[in-house]
Amino acid sequence: MTGRRKVAIVLMNLGGPDKPEAVQPFLFNLFNDPAIIRIPNPFRFLLAKLISKRRAPIAREIYAELGGGSPLVPLTEAQGRALEEVLADQAAAGKIEAKTFLAMRYWHPFADEAAAQVKAWGADEIVLLPLYPHYSTTTTESSFKDWMRAAGEAGLKAPVHVVCCYPTEPGFISSYAGLIRPALEEAGGPEKARVLFSAHGLPKKVIEDGDPYQAQVEQSCAAIVKELAIPGLDWQTCYQSRVGPLEWIGPATDKEIERAGAEGKALVVVPIAFVSEHSETLVELDIEYGKLARESGVPAYVRVAAVGTERGFIDGLARLVLESLNNTGVLCPEDAPGHVCTAERAIAGIS
Ligand SMILES: C=CC1=C(C)c2cc3[nH]c(cc4nc(cc5[nH]c(cc1n2)c(C)c5CCC(=O)O)C(CCC(=O)O)=C4C)c(C)c3C=C
Ligand SMILES: [Fe+2]
Ligand SMILES: [Fe+2]
Image 1 (tube, rainbow, N blue to C red):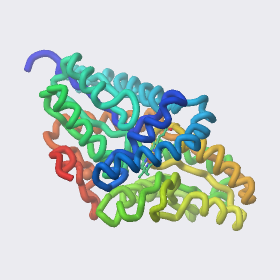
Image 2 (cartoon, protein in one colour):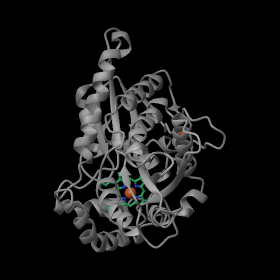
Image 3 (tube, rainbow, N blue to C red):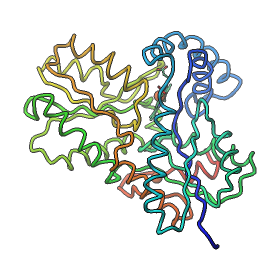
């Protein structure tokens, strides 16, 4: 091939409602995903209608705290621009022209919109880059399957490279370590504060069925603690955002906040499974759990920002993109024992 290869990088995330009227259809799309509610149709469709209608008022209140909609899309666009800049600097010694596209799972811009844009741009190759550092069937796998459907319908023929996950990517880890250090000082130092890594929870059943998410979250936390290298650091991983009647993995973040209050421990809270600010950081962690921390007597509560456009993190994403281009299948950098890569199955359309 002559000239520069045109590489479309598809940034995948969950998406969020952009206005109050979008909250219920966004929730319907989420609960109607067979990766989220694992029952066949027509039952899933009917249940999704029911739950989305019932949850919409609560969710609208959550998004009202953010001015009516989620900031996830503009923040993901900023990550895309930062990644394009880093890749333009490196651009594999001028061999590639990289452009980012957003494919959100449950609200605009959907994978279909991204696939049409990628086709119109004339991509030679495509890299699927989930903004989920940890692989889950509920998030990453669902996005991959949705992309393969959308790309098929759009008649996209360019070869696809897939990044599975990156729980211990050095830039991801060092960015968090860099954000945690000053937060620990603000909370009174490592003698007085506990680091609470708070990840999105999942139903226990999903993990028991082989989802690697929880094991990968734990790998990230251990890697960050190692990078911090603070002797005797007090830290704990916990899980937030539970919805629905099923039993979820734990310990639950709210229970850990109450425990810290009872023990007189200050907290540094790290949103470990989210790379952008959104309702679950800005509302759940900052407003709801900030209040719970005050009521529980936690002496100091400092929330660490999501990695967003931190240079180390974006450099790490750029490395993953370039590595994936040398890789014809799924780039699965996590060869740790116990890692079960299901990304191949997802892109092959096997569930
Ligand atoms: C019922 C099940 C849900 C599962 C399983 C789930 C997994 C999961 N979600 C994220 C990341 C995000 N979730 C967000 C919103 C959100 N998630 C659920 C439900 C489940 N998530 C609901 C109902 C909502 C809507 C908000 C609410 O009603 O509380 C968001 C973004 C929202 C935004 O503000 O833009 C993200 C991001 C992960 C990482 C994950 C599993 C690993
Ligand atoms: Fe969620
Ligand atoms: Fe993998």
